[in-house]
Length: 60
Image (cartoon, rainbow, N blue to C red):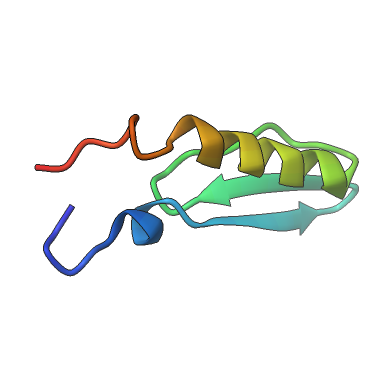
């Protein structure tokens, strides 16, 4: 992480539709599975953010 990045910048999630499926992604490179329900993709993203909470982050 550079001095200009904050932990919130490293883990910012979005969802994207691709046909009948929706996928959650994060700026850190994480990508969730393709889901038919947008709500499930959003849940995947929320779980990713919980898993990468302050105790899971490492700073150099």
